[in-house]
Structures are given as C-alpha cells and as structure tokens.
Image (cartoon, one colour):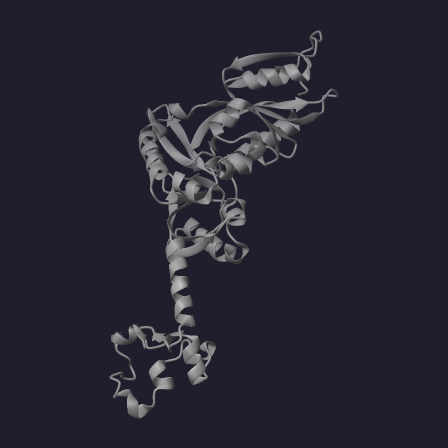
Length: 374
C-alpha cells in the first residue's frame, strides 16, 4: 500500500492525521510490512479506490462484519455496507437534553469520501454499517478517512480506519438483549426462515433453511435471493411479493419453488412474507417464514396422476359447480377434452335441463357438489 512521505501522528484513537510538513524522508517500509501491520490491527481497516470500490478489508473487519474478502471486495463500499439512514443524536448543552433525527448516512459518507479524494484532506465521520451475519445486524462505527497516494503524490484512493462505538449508544444497549433473543428464536426454529435486506440480498438464513437447501449460511449471505435461488420462471412473482413487503404489503400463503445445492430437487415452499422494521419503525427488509410442502405437493401430483389414468370416468367440480377434474376416460366417452370443460359450469353445460332436478342439483349448485362426482 503506497503511503505519504513525512510523519504520521495519531491525534486520537478514532482519527489519523497526516503531517505534511517537510521532514527528512524515512525509509519506506515494504508492501508486505504494511499488510502485516493492517492484518494485525484489532480495529476496522478498509480501503477504497477513486470510485468508492472496496479494495481491501483486514481480518478484523471481515470478522465483525461477518463478511469475507471474496464477498466484499470489488463492491461499492457505501451501497454495500452503509445503512441507508440512521439516527443522529443532537445534544442541547444549555438544556442538558438530547433529541434524535434521521440523517441520510449514504449521502453523508459519500460527501466525506469525495472530500478526502478531492482535497487530500483527512476527515472523521460516524455511520452505521450492516453486517452479513444471520440475521443481519447494524453497528455504529466512527471512521477516520485518509487519502492514499502513489509515489508521485497523486491520490489513488482512501483508507478508512474505524472504531466500533455501538456499545456507547444507549438505544443499542436497550435493544441488544431483545435482538439476541430474536436471533436465537429464528436460528432454532423448526421451520425454514430466511430474510433479505432492502436490496433483496440474503441476511437471514436459519439452520432449517440451510438443512433443506444444503446451502450453509456462510455461502448465501449477501447473495441476491431471487436471482440466485429462484427458478427463472418464478423470479417475477417472488420478486413482486418481496417488493410489496418492502412497502408494507405483506403476503400470506404464497407458494414458490426454492433451488437446492448442486442442482438437486426443487423444494416447494409455502411462504408468509413479513416486513422487517428497525427500532424506529422504518422497513429495512423482509422476513420469510416458510413451510416445506414438497412432499405434500408430490402426493397431490401422484393423486392427480392416478385419477387421470383410471379406467373409469372421474370428474369433479368446485364450490361453484365449475369443472376442475376431468380425467381421460371422461374425455374419451364424452368427446370433450379437458381444455374445453375446465372452468365450465357442469350443470348448465353438460346436464340436460329435464334431468337437473332429478339428480338433485339446481342451477346455482349446492355446496355438496364440491366433492368429486363419480
């Protein structure tokens, strides 16, 4: 990693300043020495290029964000890790009171980064980062941003050194216990539960989901749920359900197929999609509580197959007396194909008027004809 000539001094635990005053040049450490130092630091260290793309994250950063380098590097730092908005506490010293307001964290962080990259002046700012654990959480980080320069003193990027200040936030302390209980319940539930953030990326993947899909949580965190795990034919409907939940419209009993690892069988999942809220009531994602109905669907398909192949005429109607079962034998003896009759009213279409009363079925059809008629 290139570094500036001149001395560096630590102004505080949370900030680094560059002293650009003219001093004798010190021996330049080797690149390997820089990396070893950064890797050994028990603090968050990240680097971005001129476009804000993440180019480095040390081991401690990967640990606290629950995101390995292969997942994080090459992505936009702000849009990948910075929470879209957060609370900012404003203290009124004259009245010894504090109030909270919403700030656009991403716009603020982008402004600071552009300032560092454009002026080569360091900056200090605080923002909330999203972790990639299951479930995903947020952490408050105080960052010091300093320019990275090449040997010609051209700015080539920015180094971010962060201190986790989450524990100093009273509101986080108040909710940490309930969040822990919530996470434990999700993880141990005997039902597949998964969740996505506002961009559709997986941030919850409990043990049951990992068991039935054969995808461990470590492999799926941060991946786009619809694009990665949903068959192309169902991506539109599933994406629409998730998008509605992100806008507060929840869906119950939505059925869709979920892919398993290594091209295995598709699972049929009956899903309840629920909006997920932060501590101040903003929607931050979607939680899906599912039921694996794969075996039930298989049994229903086998039932339909047996009916269709039976050597006896079998037909059925729904509660409105509209045909919903019409096997091959019925089609053979009536010469009506299934496509021609499904959805048609059985009594009005296929029963002669003089016989309708005789079979005890009126034109409005009683509820008793919701069962199969043999």
